[in-house]
Image 1: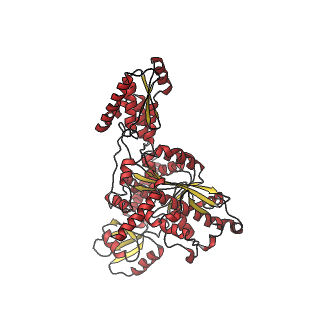
Image 2: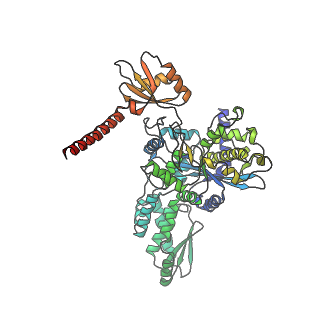
Image 3: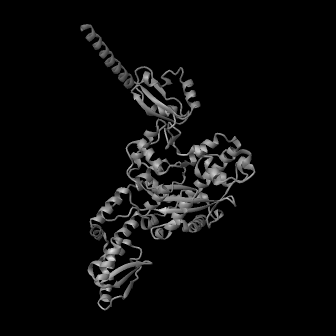
Length: 560
């Protein structure tokens, strides 16, 4: 029990150290300009996401049969109703004189707040929420302090309601009972003051109950302006200032300000969407770790519904983010050329981070760039405790990307890399060949290429398992039988044959050898033209039709 209390105290201390990086609804507007400037001045930006869920049913699972379109379709069916609820973003800025990257880390809590006719429905998955709770995810910050957002369709709806003058009526219907009481009390106070005020006199409304409630502030402004023709209201430093004016002055203020209140409330509800749009407009390199799902949900949540066509999705992502780097994929590529004693144990993000943070990898330690969090000592933080906090994961992902870039740059520039520190441009250019190639987990292909055609399959040829005699066969039966060899996926071809996708070539060869003279099963390489009755049927139909046409033409010629 004492040990648990100590751990909780350590965790709480670490979380407090990171509180400056938590971006909430209450400090989003205050920090926006800082975040915008850091995005615009960064040499590279890394991201990470935590979701409300990932899958509805076991049938939606990754498979070694999947190519790009198959995987996209499976994920699309999975994630249409799930949300990013925590988004990590870290900007990296290079100081060449010190050979150092300064990192600015942000952890955004995101929540779809209702406004007028926009009321987002989304799904949660118990296992995902349980996982987040084990990682000390703060659900109160998510619900109570999450930043709102609008996708493009939702924004169009609100702008239309604004133009048609319907926004006030829509908002008025959604005001909570307690908020309505606060509004009426404030209006009553204003009424008492207005009855005695003279032209030019001001009244400052200070009230913690409505200060951070944009809906209530909006409603107070509208009520004052609609009820009192000799009053004008403005906002300043979270206060509402009411001023007594003459009719001509009020008309001039209306002409100057127009629908400022509506624009302001729309800007508020755009919220995190503005960060998404900054990332798009910056065209800076975007780095993630195994980020295919992140890109799909980002697109669906903050841009527009996912397109049905896989190729269209790839082109649109490439337009939004023309330079994407996946540290999972890059680490696989580097591991292929490393000496065994220099390689890391696994490509999981935390393991990769620990590998570089501990200074391992002898070949590129010289002039390795220092990467530091701005105004924060990493020594005060425990990566094992912070893992799966989106902000922290975005930081260590960017950290790994820069170290991977230094590895490849050292190899690219040879002796020159041993004479001087390399530049950030050289670090990034050295991994340019890996740009827009995003890792795909457990699939027929190794990566999705957002800038062109996907690669051919890097898996062994599909195996065909047939049962001898008059018995039938099931996919589950074959999967259980072959599980001892390696990771496999199966799907039925017919009641006597099952297709098997195998994870590696040595496993495929071993299975073929072991079943060469099996008494019950025959295993061979699958050839669609030979083994698929559907393809054979299509081919024979085509031959018969073309043959019939040729014979008909020949007979017509004879009859002439």
